[in-house]
Image 1 (spheres, rainbow, N blue to C red):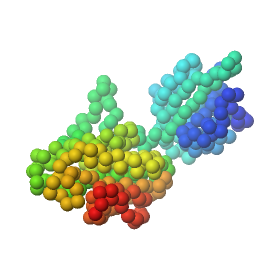
Image 2: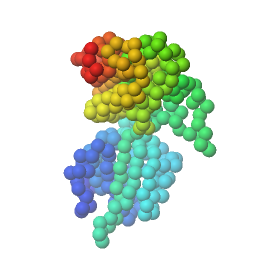
Image 3: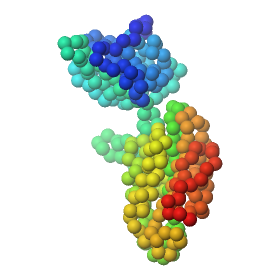
Image 4: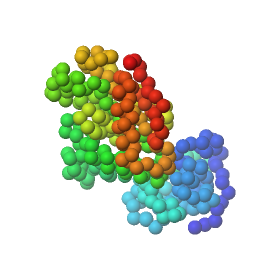
Length: 331
């Protein structure tokens, strides 16, 4: 490891904007074999678990410690030796030995008649990658998926099955607390679904549940998102690093999609078509949450919301009692 060098950005790059970026951004010196760090923002230093002075003047491969036998690292070093960028997934290590998965993008940058630099955009994707491994989303060589997909999926809706969702929730609670990332648990349930079943029967009820499942899945499409069927008429989803306004929007969007289906439920009180109630529980970055307690709080909050009215939407913090529910359709 070499000694720290003064922090400097090449002329033409807007330092304030890069410093405020949520993802890690760094600048490497081009034209030299080592391509050392010359600048990095605070987000990059936090991700790496090191002070900027510990990284400056050192090559990017320092992040991988002694774990050099990685296809992603080989691709990265080949790009640094050439002139084109790349995007790789790396196993990286913090000074305390903690491993994290880093999604890293390398892009060349050069001002007019000036030297060449490398821009690095990096993000800790440990939660997403571990979730994908758990849920079998990673394909095997040749494009085949793992053989456990059928058992992991709910046969009626195609969403994740309840037991695998519990495993995903357990992993998400652990990894988000470890990586100091926020986690949101969503629960959705159609109002007066028991009356719908009494009116139209099981076959129509299954068709209705499939439509509700599509509405839920359509709102959770990121790689890190998870959507599942928890019980006969209860659906769940997980979102990592969702801002408060996005949480509100996702919950409301699913309710609106179900309302737009105009599924008749003529014997239900208060509404003539099928409606949906939603609960979202937010776990703060770094907050320790037992997945069983989080799920139990969500179920209890959803039951209380549906007892209070229809088309309810409750967004609250984990461990905090609900302050009330939004009821557009009235009591």
